[in-house]
Length: 336
Ligand SMILES: [Zn+2]
Figure 1 (cartoon, rainbow, N blue to C red):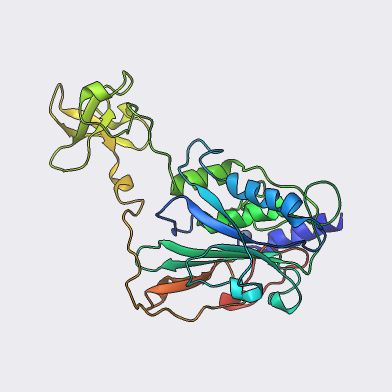
Figure 2 (figure 1 turned 90 degrees about the vertical axis):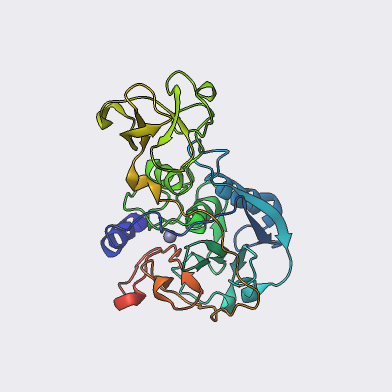
């Protein structure tokens, strides 16, 4: 009951509405991560056989294998032994690491349960590195009852930050900014699914509306025409003819199309969609300088986009917080 009361406090303290996709995203998939080779963590004596599967399930829950409308994918690249402790958290090494840190290695307060730090390119918002740390000064569990922190629940939330999501205002969502100690919250909800599919939409099945094509014969009956916008070199897509935009599926507008047949009009991607997902990669240039890694807590509202550095380290506010979230002042405001 106490946790419930605290959740109310959290609700009042968390900024009421935050954009869910942060705008930052990985351009190369799958994104591989490694997990520290813990023997045990606080509360879980057999890390590899008990906690590790929960970590992997948490990452997997967001992937295309489990969410039909996304192309997001991550892969477990194995365990690592070195570097240990805080040295594992390094935004410049292009190694995405997961580690529990205890004692003085945990530099945030006791009520912060997890933190995901992403390093991204300010020009394209491409995420280049993400490290995930968990508070081993708290007691953990893997499923079941008890007022402990559930590994899979909290890693699932942090994995949402890892892929580029901010918090969601909907209390049912994984990406909601509070966690009730002891609860099991591992199943993605509609806002989570909507967000991951917005940032990483699955390609359209061959022949269906929106799928790339070269001829009508590539397309199925519901979207029988292979057309592109007139006067543009955009790829052709399977679509259908129209006389007005209300004839078209969501996200499409009735536009002049080529090759020209019939009315010359077809349902093509709405202009607003055209510039949405960034494309192409921009790898770091050799010898490029990077800023020192920031550490410590800062809120979800932290924004590295104003940095003059080519790379900015963002503390993503992937901080899970429990009871007595305090309202900090100014830019340092925290949520989980
Ligand atoms: Zn969070």
